Length: 105
Image (tube, rainbow, N blue to C red):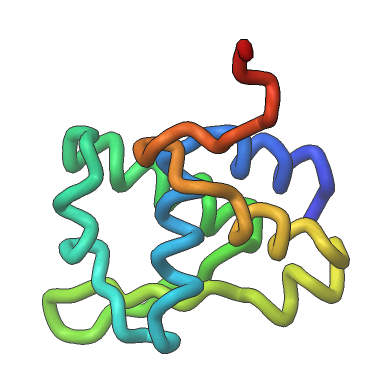
């Protein structure tokens, strides 16, 4: 697991959304099909899962017709301490903008 590969995987906002959602779910409880609300084509979503898997951020296993996912939180944190918590703490980019204190008076 190379740092550049991890950073490239986390550079995309859709992949960060997937990571945040997996972090909020028990291991092996989210199938790829439960991410239908993500605003990309199914083939693009599959690509995002492959990038995250190849970067070592998630693990997948087939269970019947479903492909279940697990965020490799402990492994990733051991390799890159502090990086995953930064991603998980990121505000939802589709939500309201954060107050930076720079508003005009």
